[in-house]
Image (cartoon, rainbow, N blue to C red; front, side, top):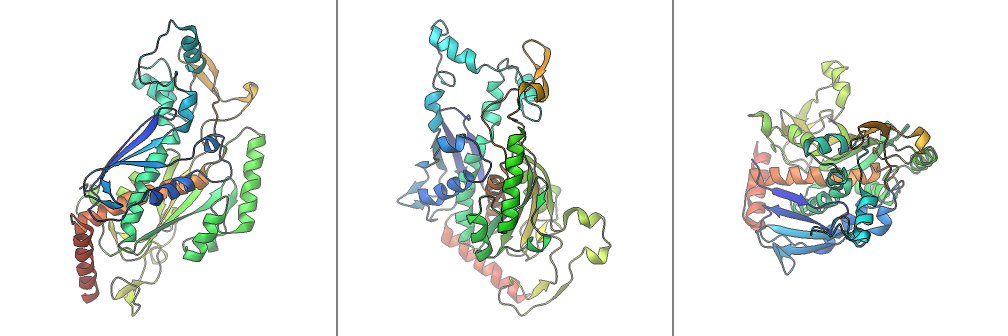
Length: 406
């Protein structure tokens, strides 16, 4: 069931990005800065391209918020594309006069029929019957993740009211990996170190090595992927359900994270090691607990499951990892560009290059935080309901008291 619904719209070089979010209760304090600070986080990270220097993403509320508080009605946001001024002729929604030589020349200069391996260009152009591949790449561009981060920022603010926090960090870029001892536990102090790092990595030595890896890739016209870790803390027992396949929380989270443009794999807890180790080294033993921090009187001695058992939260932090592939736009010379085809000439050709990044893994963590927040906010609303924040929080507190009584 979906209580929280959202849609994004807009092209990479179009006039603006638009989003609509429905389902947030009334009475949540929400300011533009609550969203803008996360948009700024998305634009940072070593290895980003020139587009980040052009855009300074800021949201404009169009609906659903009055005097700093949500109304319970759909929240409408708009984010202007600063670069649109340079694409006004090419991406203008209104009809253009092709007989005008200046207009014709501008459109022809941006016309694309060569496709990039690994991108949506090829399948999208055929599926939607477009001769100009730009009609596909403008929407399939990762610029769309700006909208998701804006939506996720609202979900994060909502979750904060319930004492739920979401963190991310970079575990790996290319061949450089953060020491395993630093995986799986992000304190507030550690997260401050993550945020201060150009690689969103808590270890300065690993950060330096990751940056060197990116520099090397840049000289070769390559791009790099990696792995990020997400941790959600403060969750109650029982979000999600075991009763139907489409209500299992790990499945819902995996779907949301896999929808991120560069995501190729999602795992929880010890991930693929669960298929290698014996059962006694995979399952988390449970014991009585006297800790006031637990949402019940019980605690798991380990968290190999990553906080989800049987499709439901078990009171431990959700821990998951997302593998992000290298982006498919490579700054290579013609002689070593990726082999491709030209849909117009129907000849073998090489992939085209348009301004791009070398590594988006640090920013990918911010985008994945947003998607995880949207899933968890929806599950909170599914379980506790409430048309106002006061009602939802009262229901939540009653449930926590019940859990403590078991």
